[in-house]
Each structure stands twice: as C-alpha cells, then as structure tokens.
Image 1 (cartoon, one colour):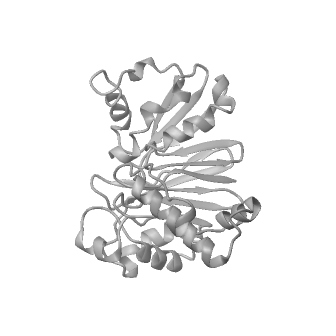
Image 2 (image 1 turned 90 degrees about the vertical axis):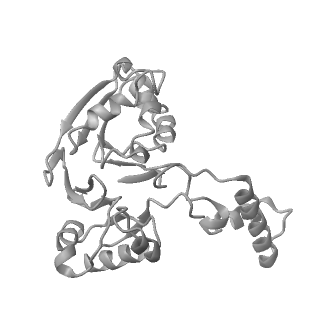
Length: 282
C-alpha cells in the first residue's frame, strides 16, 4: 500500500515566496552552525539536511488537494486540485504514458481547490487510458465539463480521448473495487463534502477533508467516530487553529486539536493533518 500526497493546501494554491525560501536557508545555516557541521563535507551536509524538520528543510507544499492510493492492483485518486499536475508527471512515466493505465477517481466535492487541476491531467489526453470517476453530488460531471469550455480553457472536455466513465454514488453507499471497499459519509461543509473510507483485509484509510465539527459531545460526533473507528490512517482537515475555527463558524473546516481529540476517541492509529490554510506558513 502506497499513499501519496500531491497537494495538501486548502482554498487555493500557495507557492512559497522568495522571502520564505531565504528564511529557510538562513535557518538551516544557523542550525548547521550550532551543530558544528563541516560545510566542506558534502556527505555530512546531506545527512544534516535530510534530518532537518519540514519547516526548515522542506515544505508542506503549495498545491491544493490531490492524493493517491496504490494498493491491491488498484490506483485510486482522491480529488483533482492543482496537485494533480504533479501527479500527471508521475503517471506519464508509467503505463499511463503508453495509454495502458486505469485509475479510479473519487471526488469529495467540487469547490475550486478540489477540481482545478483536472484540465491539466495529461493522462486523460492519452488514448487508451481509462478513468472511472465516482461522486455523490449529482452535478460533478457537469462541473468538470464546464471548467473545460472555450471561455475558461483551450481544450474542451469532449476532446479528451481517454475513456471516462462516471458513477454517481448515494450517501453512505459502499463501492467494491476488487478486494477494496470504499464507503462515504457526509461532512458539514458549505454545499456538503464527503469523507471516504477505504477498507481492505489488512488496513483502513479515511480521507476526511473539508469538514466542520461544531459540537464535540459524543452524540454529535458519534457518526464520525463510527466511520473513523480503528482506521490505520485518518487524513483530517486542519485548515484552522482552534481560535480560527471558532471565529469562522460555518466555513466548513476544522483544526489540528479537534482532529487529535476525534482520532483518539475513534481509536485511530495514525493522524495526518491536511488541507492547510494558504496563509499559514510551513
């Protein structure tokens, strides 16, 4: 099982500015000085950089929501934010580059940060590739097509030569993909979003992005505790701080601390914080 994050920002892409990169370099040099690293020793420098925390030696990333799960001979894509462009580059080095690829794409909802990368999904322009698209909102196919019209994009959706099949799911319906079972549950978000849970014989992974939890008493969150229960991985919307989540009521997002509380109650094994605000630093 391989889980990959191609985009983790919420709302809109947030690439690093030059000032932020310079600040990271400066912090890294200071840390190297404190650690007494020999700047002339390339191997020592590489080892030092590899062990730097992400806020100094890396980045949480500027692209919006797109994840993939490779498991049991299936390739699953969740959402099509701007991170889908990086995913395209990866897929084109594989069987998708020769038109022999098959992937299943699940949409949580159709806000811009979850669909804006689809027009740049190069494998869909390769004849022979196959994509099964799953969604709960009935208008998903129309939304994807409308953002690829002459007014907004140079290539029309009807020009895509890959085989694209749409499958509307009902709320709380489970779809079976070989040995995998993919269920969904509605989240509190403007115009609704849906969390997905992938279960196999060996593990369970939950993607719960774009959800707000206004009350944390057990009766209010029981349905989520049941859906997330005993998951090996819970990917959780942590766009805001607790204070921001309270101030921005009805904006449809949550915080890291709320995620930690819910994960603990649901006996989740690993919590991954996700969908970070574009104004937040690494």
